[in-house]
Length: 598
Image (cartoon, rainbow, N blue to C red; front, side, top):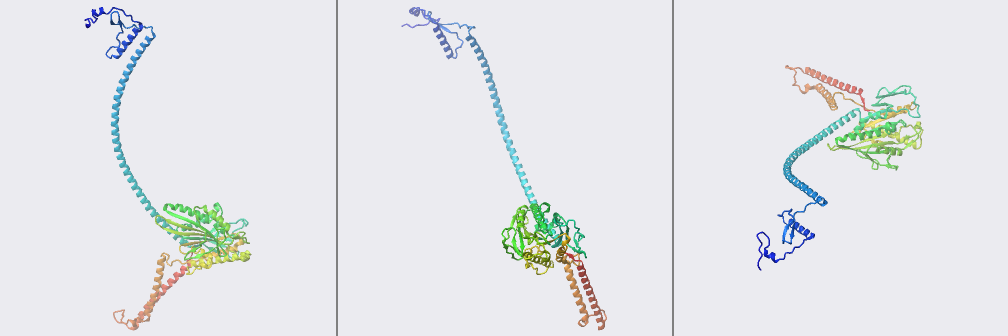
């Protein structure tokens, strides 16, 4: 079969044209549309082909594809308008996308630059942070070391100052004790209570005089009798009385045993002085406890630790009973070497002054009282409140124990005046006996006698630690009634106190201390004896014993030598006699200058 060759013009050859019958194939509208769609598909599938190519159609009559002109847009067609609008929107969106791409590119570039810069700054910051941390650690270490050193130095200085403070406190306590001792280890004070309900408050006190703060006189109509004591209080307040004896309470805190004894006739205010009432009427017992707790708080800065324990007992008919127990049981008193122990006595630790109130109420409830002609609520026993003190110091390791005894004695009475009998008479007998034994013990203690009769009564046995023994101090506070009707008993109370007053010799040479005074007395006695013996030696006959002695270059006769030695003997005896007379005169003069211990 002969091949068909296209013509130069691209048209089919005439032979083929002649072979194929010339038939015109009409194209319907759908075919034309399908052909246009095929053209669009080919255009979209061929990237190199322009998308705006004109649609094409097939002409069957000629047998070739012929390009069709682009359809003319119908401006009245809404779809065309919408299409045009979309094209404009697409163009704007493409511009926006291009602008966005440009901005994203710029921001990406800036981000990279800033990230790099931030990394560099982080590196620099880390380096500087490490440098500063190292410097700060060095500064902190140096400051910490300086702080520790300063703290250590401050603690050492504080410890040193505390040690010095403790030492100075010890010296102060020693000096205070010396001052108290100079005033007397055993003192006597007198207190005149004011008039109370039932007494004539308008009665004059002309029968009792107070020349000064240390003297009191009693005038019964004949001749005034004067007494002198260390303290005399004329209707003084409770606070004033306590302030006068506060130094004794300080001695307890310093490690000394102290006893304050209230003596007087029944109804003279002994219980009021010791126990007191409420508020400003508080007595010595509550005020002393309050003061000791206050002092304990002040001494905490010097590392002092104080513990207080209280007990309350009574001596009734020479038997001991515990006032802090409701059971009425006799207690056994064990007398050791310088210390009295009561095994079954109840002791209560005090944590604050408020703890004392309940103890006082219980003791008042259990104490023995009875009505007499002289007093409706007369105390029939001797009440003894004891506060034991235990102290330790953490700095000096010093430790001591001491005690404060506050004694409310039973009132002294006379059988004729009180008109008592039966049990009351037995009570009065034991009371007066105990008071008499107390007077004897104080007198023997002040006279420094070898034997002190502490065992004569239970009261003196219990108080032997405080009655002028060792490092103890005692105050006897004599209470008086102001009325003239009780003047006789008032005078007896003052006589009782005056009988225990002992006079103490001053040194012969007041400017010398006790040791030098005693030394001078011994030397004086030795001098007197030596001069007397030397005079006797000359007088007996030194010439016969030593005949070779000569007083001049030329020999003297025996008579002349005897005369010379006799003269010297007389001179020695005269000197010894004068020295002895001087010593006797000084001792006699010292007796005239005696001072009272109370």
